Length: 339
Image 1: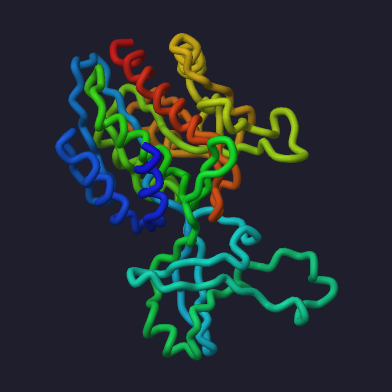
Image 2 (image 1 turned 180 degrees about the vertical axis):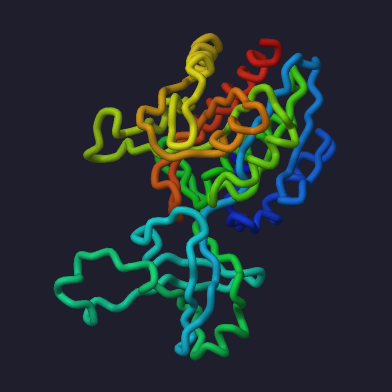
């Protein structure tokens, strides 16, 4: 699963440009399941288990990552861009990126310090003041290399460090995808459906479609969520802690979770000796927001990998927590099968 995650994080796939991720996933699951691709690009999988459950169970993880998209170039050859998904400007200043199918290298540049007014020195620049330098001398040269509409993704090496930590771009939500690949390649106790969804980062669009197609009774959303277990942050503001296992949500900005499912997840973790914790802050949102409102309603639970520095080139998590999310997801499939 760790090698799969490394492969997934190394590939580009912003919202609406998930085809490379989808092709890789198909290469890993072919022969283990039945699958199809819907018109929006979701990869829908049916995995035959040892038994047929009385309930339809869906697992979901999104394939897309936050990034940017080329909008044009100025007369000096610097690229202009728009964000795809929620990215804070301060985390991209000075970062290396890759652009388009030809993987053109670029750097996020800003006005040099000697040209900034004294009153502006401590301000975070507006996104429109940033540009991408690809070494072009003018607009014509830039647009000969890169076209408007091309994907921009962060360049970030996947590395392990410290006590089981991982650093990479796109751990949100390639961690969930790696877990689902591992489950599909394993021998499950019950039949199960999986959605590798598109366009979560721009409004949970893919999951809305895949949930309608699958029409599940229960949905288990596999995600990452903010771990603010960093210097100077205390109490519930820490949200969750790396190394303390799967983070289970009771509410976020898109979903108020069924309290019985929230408790069931924590009780199941305790029952099977799986490490789990509560997500202690009402923040963020994920595909559960679309899935739980599908058709006549779906009972949903979200299990997240605690991850520092989300939506940046340097997401950080612990592999241990990914394993705990995987094990809790498998246990909940059995719990929901005939509930």
